Image 1 (spheres, rainbow, N blue to C red):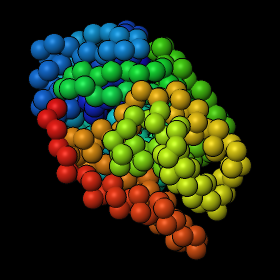
Image 2: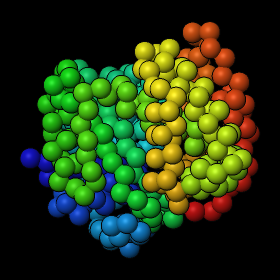
Image 3: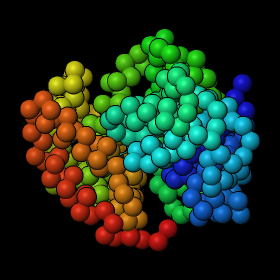
Image 4: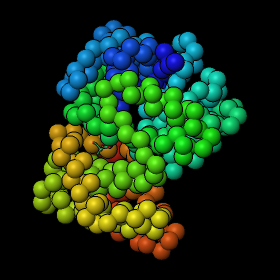
Length: 315
Ligand code: KPL
C-alpha cells in the first residue's frame, strides 16, 4: 500500500500531480527549489482552475530530507533528470520511480543515473508514463490546471523487470482524479506525445502564444511542417503513424490544452532552459542517423535556443 509519495520537482506538473495525490489521501513530500518550498510551507500548494484545491504537503529542498517514501514521482524537466536521479539514488533506497518527462531517450538517461547513484538493478524500479496534464505555473507553489488530461502507463505484463513497480504506480494513480490509461504499446505513446510536442512546443514558444493558437493559420501550417518531419522519423524508428492520424492527434491535444501555455513557452518566459534538445534536438539527431533531413525542426530548434534566456520574467 502506497502511503507516502516523494514528488521531486515542484513545477507545474509536480505541483498538479502532487496535489491530486494529496487529495486522494496520500501523504506527499514535494522537493523543489527554495522559492516553491517556502511558499508551500507558508500557504500550502495551490491549484487553480480545473479541480481547484489547496493542499498542505511537506516541502523540502533536498531529495534526501523527510521520511521514507513508498514511491518516487520525478517531475523535473528532462534536462534536470540526470542530476535529480543521481541525487535520489544516492540519498534513498530503491523504490518504484515514476518518470513523467517529455522527449526521447529518457529511460536510458534514468537507468544510467540511478545506477551511478548506487541502485542495483534500477530497471526493476523505473516506470515511465506519458502525461498530458495541462498545467501552467503561476508562481511558487501556485499552479493552474487548464484541463484534466490523462496519464498513460505501460501494461505491466509487457513491462519486464518493472512489472511490480508498474502495478504499484498504476494502482496509486488510479486512486486520483487523473484519468489513467494502460497500453500494450507504450513506445507508440511516447512517440505520439513526442510528435505533438515537436509541433506545438517550439511554435508556441517562438510566437509566445497559447496552444490553441496553432489550430489557426498561419501557425497551423508552421506546426504541421514540424509534425510531418517528426512523423517521418517515427516511421523510420518503426513506429508508423498515418499522416491523418498524426494531424488528428495534434488537433486533439491543441484543442484539449487550448488555453494552456506550453511548457516550452513557460520556460522561455522565465528565462530557463527548455526541453528543445530532448524533443527537436533528438529528432534531428535520429533523423540524421537514418539519412532524413529535418530542416524545419532544426530551424525551430535553433530559434528556441536563441530565445531561451532572453526574456526572463520574475516568478
Ligand atoms: O506536453 C505539453 C507541454 O506543454 O509540454 C502539451 C501537451 C503541449 C501541453 O501544453
